[in-house]
Length: 50
Image 1 (cartoon, rainbow, N blue to C red):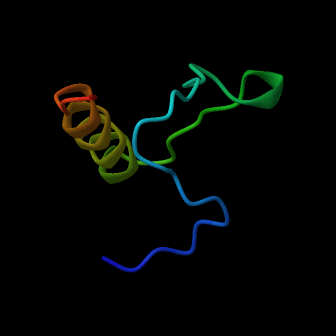
Image 2 (cartoon, rainbow, N blue to C red):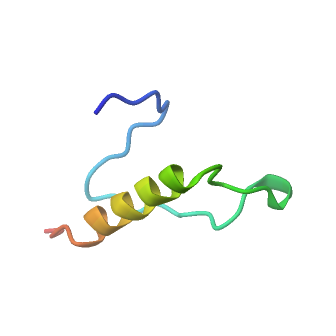
């Protein structure tokens, strides 16, 4: 799936996930964005790190 993300995430690294935006703005503008984030988190939670 193509992406326009400037930062490419690397395997076997730890990332901090923010729970709200600057000035308490919403992070997800619609349900599709939220669902994509949840699916991505679930995918990486179950990877085996060696």
